[in-house]
Image (cartoon, rainbow, N blue to C red; front, side, top):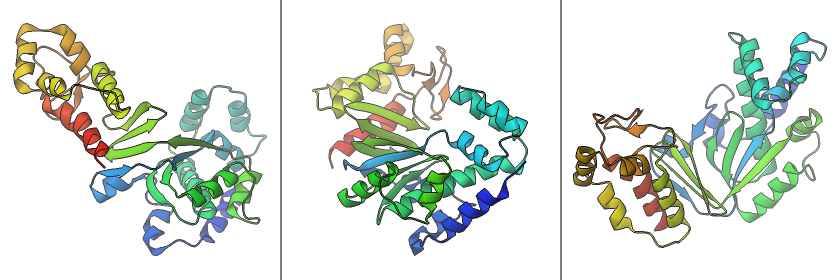
Length: 292
């Protein structure tokens, strides 16, 4: 049922790639399945470069298991009869639960995505490495080189990249205009759109609108926002139960609020909220990023 040759061949080609000394720890297949430069350095990371790109493996787990398991097995046949991506991933996770294969899928994802980037660019800044994707910053020359490889137009023969394409893997590319990482949260801008991922990806609707306008150069009233998120103003909101302000400026789009411990919790009139946390998590980092 299990086809070991695929994994052995993939690993052999990956091991032929020459990694710099600084990359040795990241490139190890059994460590750093996820990696964030800002979290590793314990500092604010900002990138304002048009060549900030995220590369993802399209339908990563279903493609991998089709390479690992026999096409005639009931597992693969049942999987390939499904059409919904989420349903496929759930089926794989439940079918391979408590087996070595589930962890191996993550290792293979890392080998494919990190090896592909390394093999097709001369130099890049690794910002994020996730289960089936990678975020990097490139100069113009390396960006053009990588685009050719992603489109399957130009890459080295007898290479990891050729092996990847021979086994029906495809990549999806997303370009971002800017990137900021702090507090275990990533802020992206793309075509005037603000995208937030990570620990504090949920925020109130009015605050999201304010940040979007601010990043797009529109005139905003920062003084008003500081007033709304002051301790004095929050006491007024709380005492008078000003529901409009609570819903618009404190209840996040996961229907929770941030408490004094900086955790998302259900809201009640007795919830212990520190309004300054909203400024620290969302407003101050983006204001600082605009000054660079």
